Image: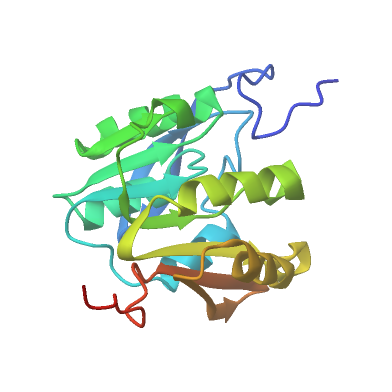
Length: 213
């Protein structure tokens, strides 16, 4: 019996490609799903809480869905912000293939589904939306968030949804301690056992004034 997880790079389980129905951005779509990915049959509860409690995305720029799965967050971002470039990032290559298939079905052309290392290093994000892979373990999760939150543009927000029973409050405390002083973290919503955390990069500290020459 395989011990793979939805965050396995190359799932060994049977593909079992099939169609299912999901509602994204207020419209019902018939999309593709498969085995070996996160929440293959529906928009999971945490993602639904995130999508229902996050402001509209910026109208342009680079937007990131970190840990995209079959794509509910990335596809929503692309639909709601058609002039942006959406990056759907995952280590699971099967999930990335599904995002591409689903984007084609939906007529979406402003979305790149790719592995983390394929996102150009110079890109900074106007927003990050994520239902992060909590089950990868605390150390790996912290490395993941530290890497990507550091690429938030000045004045931009990241929105993270985490189940309360899986450590949302301890993650909140860690973010407060680990991120640079120019970042702020607050709980923006609580619903159905999930917290939505808003992480803002305030940019340069305006309280620091250079001494006159």
